[in-house]
Length: 328
Ligand code: AMP
Ligand code: TRP
Image (cartoon, rainbow, N blue to C red; front, top):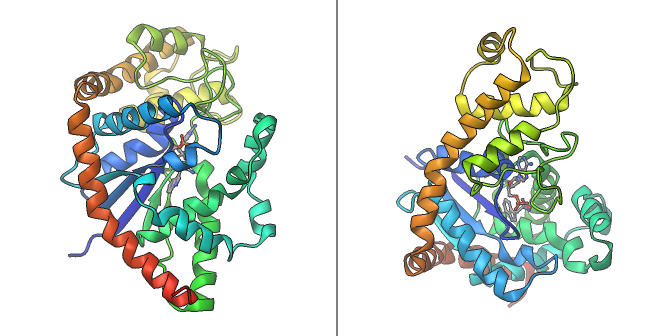
């Protein structure tokens, strides 16, 4: 039986948080047996914002260790570093020449990021979705498990692939987004109207996977809620709704069961339960990470094996693209 292939990536730009985990990485781990999996630390994407070279290298290995600690299993999945395969930027260039300025101009993430960082609005940041499209299309992925914020980039990827196939001949698989029903958009704890992000400044904004139980408890206790003291799933009560969603994914309970469990109970008790379930879910990850981060040689070996496994796929696609375009 031929398994479908999934490809996904994550940037080594900061500590990985609960939004990354619930929106993306947990799903990569949970569906590993169902698919043929390729996961990538997208360090070339990371340099669209200013990075200290020494720290970037360090963070790249740390993220790889963290993905393994989360449960990425090398028997089922390949893990590699984007910059190790030259076909990524090479294909991005060819895709660039097939994406209109109009379509690229519509990308909302570029607008958000350039507003947040007005002193470094570079061409790479604008062009970021073409590199992401290249990542995916090189591996002929059937599916791309991501959080909701990547939906628009996926749409661009599909569009450029279809256009290329039409203009030059059948070449790329058209990938489907795989976006979770719950957890696709985890919001900031201090600001439940904005998504949890690595770069937000508030100390109570995000829960990082390496936070201690004390830190987690403190952040959840401080999480923004409202003054209505009933625990019900109501999208209009953004802070509570966010905590309920987090609780729901981590406990796998139904909406009704959760509302029933907390009927007549207040925020104090509910928040303790949320903190507890996060702590228990993150504990094994934190412990495993501590073990793995002491074994850099082992991580390097895994990444090398991953690169060797996926390189032929990237090369085959890129060679075909060049030929179709007339570049040899
Ligand atoms: P990034 O940190 O931007 O490289 O994102 C890595 C993955 O995490 C992508 O699939 C994103 O869609 C996902 N992600 C990032 N932030 C969130 C969030 N707040 N909620 C859900 N998913 C997220
Ligand atoms: N743009 C994604 C993000 O910021 C990261 C990414 C880069 C990615 N290349 C990818 C995700 C390919 C999925 C597939 O989250």
